[in-house]
Image (cartoon, rainbow, N blue to C red):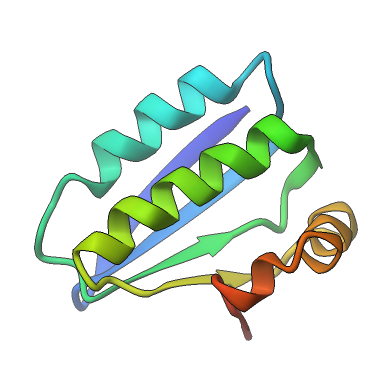
Length: 102
């Protein structure tokens, strides 16, 4: 599991790779919270191209970060979902709250 980020023009780009599950959830939660602490972001885009696996715990991590950002009126988008991530997002209707963009 790896989480990387960069900021360009007040947009925070986050890339999550590997497996987001019960074994990596705490690391992901802490890392993402550290990257989301800035109040200067207008939006967050999460790249899931290299996410090979995600279970319900991983879904919970993403929803938790979404809720924190929603409180600050910061929209969250998903791009490049891996086939596995795309399937999970479709099954759980996560695209309703974190729309997919190109």
